[in-house]
Image (cartoon, rainbow, N blue to C red; front, side, top):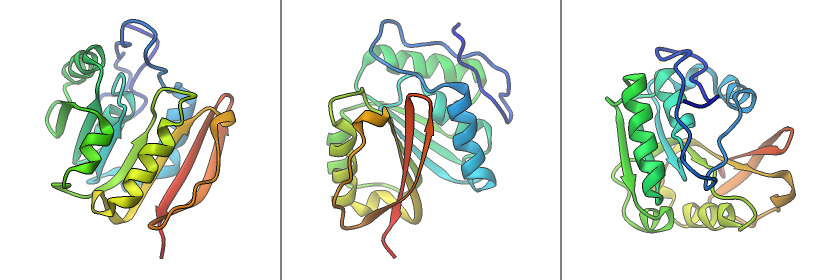
Amino acid sequence: MSGLRVISGTARGRRLRSVPGDSTRPITDRTKESLFNIIGGDIKGSTFLDLFAGTGSVGIEALSRGAKFVLFIDNNHKAIWTIKENLAHTVLEQGAEVRRIDAYQLIKDNAHISYDYIYIAPPQYKDLWKTALLSLDRHPEWFSQDAWIIVQIDPVEYDTINLNQLIEFDQRRYGSTLLVFYKRVE
């Protein structure tokens, strides 16, 4: 097990496995705790899409804190194995679905449900977050009316993006991690 853990909720304190190798960059406990302090009690009963899920740490935290359903998406077979192991270890398999698919391909498909929270944390320095955000902007059926789309990037990656359905409403920086928050245009 690694230094990753579930911070709060039903699986509080449980350690999580890291994805073998260096293909992922797990969120720090400090950043994850801050993220869920911002979301607050609204996570209870919500639907959550964890794109580029890696270890599954963010989606697992959402389940532990009361999210109704989390869809974990990653294209890396090691990440998929790790997410499934972490769900089993935290006893949070119920309400979770894990799919090995390219995130961009998934978004092009019809959404079966709309999500209240979409978390985007792709590999760094490749502008993959922009591609994912633009794709979601073209497919608003993926997010509910009051949804938040949250992007995790290195601050040097940030750029403003022209969007039609979404608007940036907040940014929070935690060391070398920047969280950028988007919601539907009203």
